[in-house]
Structure formats: structure tokens, C-alpha cells
Length: 445
Image (cartoon, rainbow, N blue to C red):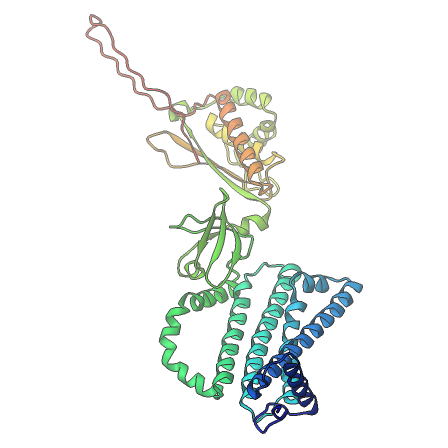
């Protein structure tokens, strides 16, 4: 005798489920297997759950297909970003568990224990799918805003990571409450006992989150900024910034990772101001041998002015104004005199730099003498290039120093060189001895 198709303990709730149990019963008899109520229920549950997931999977594919083609029909930046980040696909993950939850009451008795298990599993699956979908949406919003709207290149990735982390924490708490059939409020109350442990586990994330807010609000760092962090080997461009790390690509293409809070706790140098200004500073010291500095006559000044026409107007103006300096547009007064060769040389250096097409002459230009040292008299060149490109900057400052070093001899000036000369004589009777060290030109940055 066959066992009854539907018993008081069977999971069936509707005629469809009863028909399915009857079909399973006849199938087992046809292949010569003994029918058993629990076996029939297990097979029935498997078919129902598999069918529900299959229906959900098919709906997911159909809906995603429709959405994808709808986006392609009207191309836009948002649509391309949705497809590129697979945001639509991840949002569709929630469809299969929702179908299972919707079909469960039609296939199972709500009072049956199996119904509770299936609903709880499907509910937890739906919660995790919801978390994945929300994470995809947050990531899409970040990528779109960071690409098209974030003109200041603020480090927003840390904030997105925090939002996704908060979503997952909430989802995990809700999932545990569904699995245990307990109120989420009770679970949150119990979490207070683990607060200390959580603080230790998420210490870097919490500090990174706070540091990220400070860095963003104070506009301290952007992705793409060149930064130098003292006491570390970080000296390069910021590639990325998350809750726990700041990635810096050094000038030698090595990657350095730093915790964000290290940038807040100590000082660091940001070269963004230089990049945005469009000019870069040159500060170079040329050490002059002080013994070569001397007074010059008007004829000597005229000879130098004839050789270097830039000086002619300067010399004539000084003589007309009894030595008073004249202003140049966009520049402090030409720093020089016509009484000494060094004064006239300083004036020439100022005029040469001011008229150099690679120099930004609306910025400060200065050629000045620093405090004398045992090595000589430092002459400092201070100006700004009209570009921030590294290669061009190095070429411009090298050319300026090379030119200045070359022409200083025409003004009767010598670049300082250290030498030691010892001469020993004994009333002209003994032979002299001489030792000379190797000349060392001093050119300091």
C-alpha cells in the first residue's frame, strides 16, 4: 500500500504541492523504490527550493538583460559607469531570495519546522544580497563623483569604505537576529560587552576614518598631490587613500604605504601649491672669492656695459639719478651698483634673469649677497621658473648657473676655490717646497 500523499506532518500547503507529492510517490513506485513520508518530503522540498531559485535566477537574468540594453540604448556617463562597475548585476542578486520568500508560503505549511528554516535561510541570503547591492551603489556613486565631479580630488574613498563597512555591520547584526529569532536591540545591547575588543580590532579603521575627515575638511591632501613626509621614505605622488593606508608613488616608482593618521599627527610637505601656481622656485648659491672684489672706474663700467647691452640702460640711469635704483615692472629694484665689479655683476645677473623667457618675471627675482664665510662671499640667485616640469626646471636652473659662472670672469670675479700654499725659504739659500691641494669649486644649492 502506498503511503498517503498528504499527512498532517507533510509540508504541503496548496494543491500544487499536493500534486507534486503525488507525482513523487508515483515516480518512486515506478522505479521500484519503497515510498516513505520523510523521503517524499525531502525530495519535494528540494524540488520546490531548486525551482524557486531557478525562477529567481531566470528573473534576475531577464531583468539585468532589459536594464543593460536600456542603458546601451541611451549612452551616458552614468550608464557606462553602471555597466563598468557591474552595479546593475550586483543589485539583481537580491531577486532569487525574494522569489524563494514569495513562493515559500505556497509550497509549505507555515507551522512546519522546515518552513521556518527555509524562510530564515532565504532571509539571510536576501540580507547579504542587499548588502552587496548597497555596496555596489556606494561604489558607483564614489567612482562617478570622483571621475566627473571631484575637481579638488578630495580623498573620498575612505568615507565610502566607512559607509560600506557600516552597512555590513548592520546586515550581520540583522542576519544573526534572523537566525536566532531574536530582536536586533538585544544583540546591540550584548555588543556593549565587546566594545573594547572591537576598538582594538578596528583601531586603524577608526583612526583612519577620523584622519580622513580631517584631511578632507582642511583640504590638506588630494589624490595626485606630491608630498614629502619627514622621517619616512615617502616622497612622491599620492595614488590612493583608504581608511587604513595612503599609497605614495616615489620618484623612483617605488610604492610607500602610510597610515592616514600619521599625516595628521605629524607635519608633511605638500607641493600642490607649487603645481597650481605654474612656477617653481630656484635658490642657488655661488661662492665668490672675496679677494677678487674691487672698485671699478667709470670707463671700466662703460666697457662692461658695451659688452653686455643689458647693463647700458642700468648704468645710465644710475648716473642720472646719482646712484638711486630704478624699479622694473613686476620686479623689485635691480639689486646692484656701479662702484664695484660685484655690484655691477649683481645688476647684470638680475637683468639677465628678468629677461630670460623661461623665468616668471612677475614673481620675486633677487640676486643678493649672504653673510661672508670662511669659504668666500656667497652670491644667492632667487627666482621662479615659468614651468613646473621637473626636466625643464632642472635644465633652466642649470643653464642660469652655468651662464653666471662663465661671465663672472669678465667682471674680474673668481669662483671661490680652496687652496693651501706653503713656501719655506731660508734667506734664499735653501730650496723652496710647495704643496697645493686640488682646486674645489664651491657651488651650493
